[in-house]
Length: 224
View 1 (cartoon, helix red, strand yellow):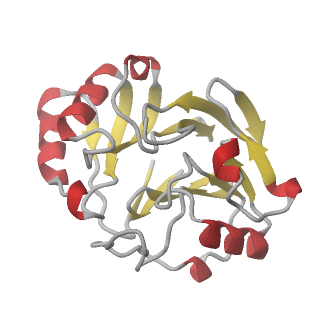
View 2: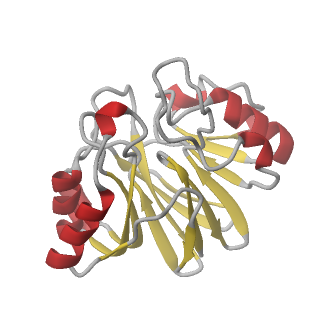
């Protein structure tokens, strides 16, 4: 399994021979606010994709232009809550509805849709994605919550930006409660209100948990 950070909360996973995108958002100059850190790639560079997961409807997680273009080019299926799906102009055959508490298998990938605590969103979710005997927890935007203690995964992709999601202290608390071999911080430094120091978070994780922190550079990935 391969995990690559594409910027903000966007990731590429290679699992079971499938290419998976998580919250793909490749707009370098969004009209909503200034993006301080550009995406690693543009949407036209995505030539292969089997599955797209969307955590919620906000512009920096659900990008209709990027998703529509990728689906048109690759015929990928999109897993998303109804409120996010409603923003997309994709064929019905490409849609896979996701609600917290559901589990299903698609393209040989086992999916568990979990809750997300993000009151600014209408219907936020997270995902635990399993394949090749490995597992990834993609938190999307969320605050820390008790149910995270039940997650036993190889990789946890957690926001640390604060303001509208976990800050580094809350993310550290989450890491302490869950079982994860690796934690990768995300959703930081993209906007002014998300400025954080990921290496300080990594040092705290290393000092107080058994989880190995992995701070990825933009566009960088690692094998599990």
